[in-house]
Amino acid sequence: MLKFNLRTTFIALVMTASVAACGGGGGGGDGSDVAAPASPSLSSDIPASALASVDALIAFMNNLIDTGTNDTSEPILLGESVLPVSDTI
Figure 1 (cartoon, helix red, strand yellow):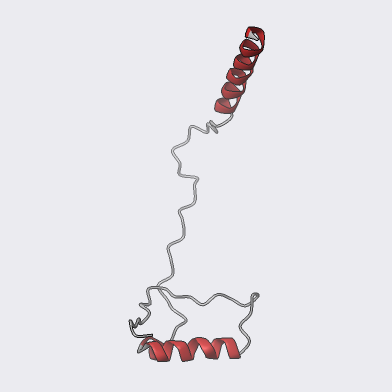
Figure 2 (figure 1 turned 180 degrees about the vertical axis):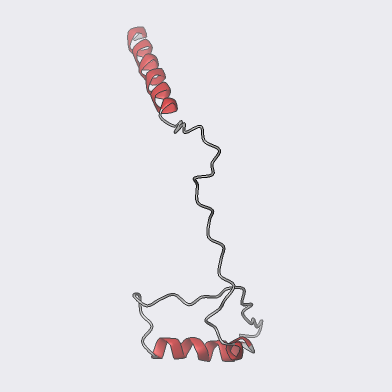
């Protein structure tokens, strides 16, 4: 039993060391070759009329659905649009 525990412990230590050793990546550069993340778009595909009320937003969304929006179409950009809300709906 002691031999099994000693062998298991040794294998666990070797595995831990090998996993820790492969996480480096090195490079040693100043990071200037890393591309900056793209900033989010401030433009919006939602017309101002759809942002006027919840009913107008629902009508706009229903129109998108009726005109053939599907899984392969481009996503609608929200940008910094603030969608209307209502506690009564």
